Amino acid sequence: MKKDIEEVLLTKQQLAQKTKELGAEISKDYEGKNLLLISLLKGGVVFTADLMREITIPLDIDFMAVSSYGDLSSSSGIIKIVKDLNEDVRDKNLLIVEDIIDSGLTLKFVKNLLEERGAKSVKICTILDKPDRRKVEVDIDYLGFKIKDVFVVGYGLDYANRYRNLPFVGILKESVYKM
Ligand code: IMP
Ligand code: MG
Image (cartoon, rainbow, N blue to C red):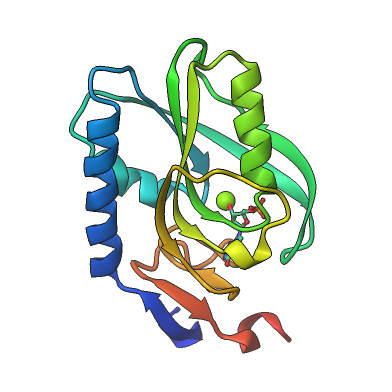
């Protein structure tokens, strides 16, 4: 897998340090409140697993999988729920945990949906953000790293369902997807 990586953008150590900082901030902000992490499958799962262990207050966790129609590099904005939550979100403080925000369409859809279902609050935590590609505005409450407009894999992020298990975030070589 490593031979397909052009450049390592974020090392395992950088990701761990930032996750620790975010966990501390979240623990402080949600002290004394109920907290339900909404992990977005599949990409968000690696970050969620690390982040939840850096949060020191009680929490619950649930999972949701959504997919957007369109090709690999641009989403259409039509989002489909592939796997819905098990938990009732009414009156709960939700924190959506995502791998990357690109166009923003996925997060906008998920956030609106959870608000409509009666959540008390809905906030967003993402390890990566590609602000140059934004199509709709989304407020990011907890952000790991802003990155330039490049296609990255690892730390949960995939290309054609591969590379999610790389412990770092790296730029995928163009030769892998331009064939
Ligand atoms: P958005 O709706 O365009 O914000 O879509 C975000 C989703 O697109 C993420 O959850 C990822 O699954 C995927 N995505 C966006 N950029 C990348 C990337 O550089 N590598 C891998 N997946 C990406
Ligand atoms: Mg995703």
